[in-house]
Length: 415
Image (tube, rainbow, N blue to C red; front, side):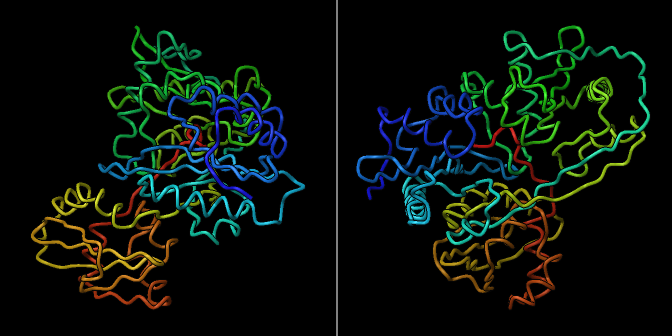
C-alpha cells in the first residue's frame, strides 16, 4: 500500500474510480472539478495505490470561509471513494489520516465534509453540525401582480459581475460562507457544479437578486448531483438596496412550481432568511423546518483558528458597553490547547495552557459556539453534565466572544 499525492497522468483513473463508487451520470461534475477548477492542484487528490492500481481516493479542496468579519482557511473533503472489492481493508482510513497530516502541513484551520456515514468520520475527529431545511406544502395555485422586476434565466456574459457583487455583499459577514474568487466564478466547473445561478431578477439593467433554483426533472444544463440529491432552492442572494427584487424572485419560484403541478417546494436557508417569510406569506402556506446533520467539521489547528478570529473577537467586544478587563481562557479541545487573553478589549492568542479559566470542550459543542448555533449560556446545562462548570462572569464574556448567529454553507459550494 502506498499513500501519496496524485499525478496528472492518473486523473482519468481517479474519475473512473469515483464514477464506479458513486454514479456515472455525475461524471461531468467530477471531471470538471479536476480539469476545470483553477484552484485544484494534483497534490490535493490523495490516493491509495495497491499493486500499481489506485484503489481509494480523497480530494482536499482549498477554500476560505467567513466567520463573522474573520477569514479562515478550510480544507473541503470530498470524492472519498474506495473500489468495492478493496473495502474493509483500512485503505480509506489510511487516506483520512493522510489528509489530516496534509491539511496540518498546508496550514488549514478547519476542515469540512458532507456525509451520511458520520460514525466513520467521527473516528478521525470530525463532528456533526446542523443545517436547516425548509419545506412548503403548497395549496391552491395563486396568481401575482406584475412586478417591475423581470425574472429571467441567468446569462453569464451579462450578469456575472453583478451577481458576484451581490454574493459578496450578501455573505460578507455570514459565517460559514465561502469567499469566491473571480476565477471560481469564471472557471468552467462553476456552471457544472451549480455555482452559477439559474434565475436573476433584473430591472433596467440592474440585477437585484439571484437564485440557484430547479427541479429534479430539469437536468438539461443543471448538475444532476444537485438536481437529484438536494432541495429545489440551493442558494439565493439579493441586494440590500433592492429588497423588492426578492419578492419578484419569490413569485417566479412559486409560479414555476405551480406550472409543474407540484405541491411541494423545498430549500436550504437559515430559519429567518426573508425569502422563507415571503414564500410563506405569498403562498399562504406555513413552512416546516427540519435539521440535517450531514455536515461535519474538524478543527485542524485550534491556535491558528483563534488567531484568525482576533479581528472578529475584538469587534464583538467593542459592541458591548461593558469594559472587559483582563481575563484569560484556556481552550482544551481533544488534544489541542490554546489560550485566549482579553485585556481592555484587546485579544491575544498563545499556543499554551496558561489561561486561568479552563474550557475543556469537545468538537461538537465548540462548533456550535464557533458558528453561533448556540451560546455557552444556552449550553450551560449540557456543559455542566459534561463536567465544564463556568462562573457567571465567564459565561457573559464567552457569550460576547461567541454570540448567537446564523451560519450557512451554500449547497453550490459542496466539494
